[in-house]
Length: 510
Image (cartoon, rainbow, N blue to C red; front, side, top):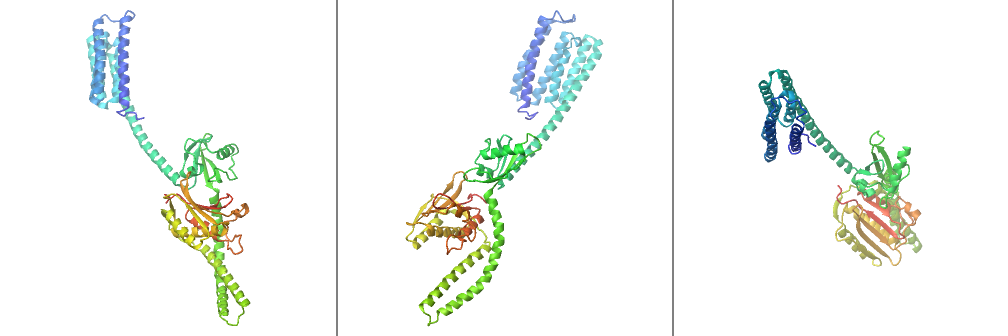
């Protein structure tokens, strides 16, 4: 609240002052009408003059109230009203008998109000007028009261000085508070923007689990809004941490979209009632990072070995080709040469895949509609595999952000895998859509096969793991690497069939 804002503070103070004046007039009338016999009134007291002047004071109150609101509480109207109020109160004190009645002290209220509402010079002017009227009336009544009048005059000037000083101090304090409030608001906005852009999910909660703040990453994981409570697993972990002080060691299952997260708790301050900050991280991304560190060194090692193998392999193939040109070879010999050629091609394919592991291709992510890319890939596969039935289910428009060349490589590998493992009659379904909770686009590739069992699914994306005698075990691993490079996720869904899902990042990301 602003202390001296003309739109808020001044009208309230004036309204209170007007009410005070009406109450004062009523008290004076009742006191002098019903209890004047108990007062030691001087002989010069004239009741008629007192009540007439009091009636004029009441009329002035109503007129000044209307004038103050009609003139929008400007400085000149406030000065006129306060000055008139001081003159009338001094007049009532004079008619009632002078300084001995104590009514002169009533002028301290409008004088103090002048120090609040008016500039310092105007407030001192009103105090000077009041003191002059008081001194003049004292000389008319009894000069013996001069010391008492002098003290009252000093008090009036001291009141103006003190109230004006406090007003200036409060005004400066208010200006400083406004500046600090602006700085604090900007810092809050800055902190909120920084927290929202962090990929680490962060939630600030009370000790009872009521959410006070969370960034966008936390909303994607917890699917909660502000003023809601934590999910059951997180709330239970928070209660245990508050009791024991030990961080959760096991991963927590939050929801179906993000089945496991690692959680750590931190108190914002050392206060026992401090709010709690919760840091979360998708356990799968942590495992992927660890896997990347292990495979980085493995990729360099296998790449160097692949280069060493390629040279003797080329010599073997060259010798096989020269030998195949000989005319004296029998059919069994030529079958052996064909076997050598097929295995040389297989080894060469393995070497190419291994070398691809060691290469880090640059990613040129762009936003585009997934539909045309899916359609072109399916048309190519329909021309190559006439015995396979392909079905496409997708919305009219589905924007994703991906490297188009890498997306083609990813789709070709997954479709090759689907065609190879589909059961008769072979069918492959491509279904695209958007996850409602996170608004992330996805693409499901489902074949008519039974799908891998639980043991196979655990190792499905590891390099060199394969269930086929002729497989290299690198196809699905490369697919996952391509997905990770484009901030997407490739997973195998356990639903009793060959079901792979590519969960793309939000197309609005940068």
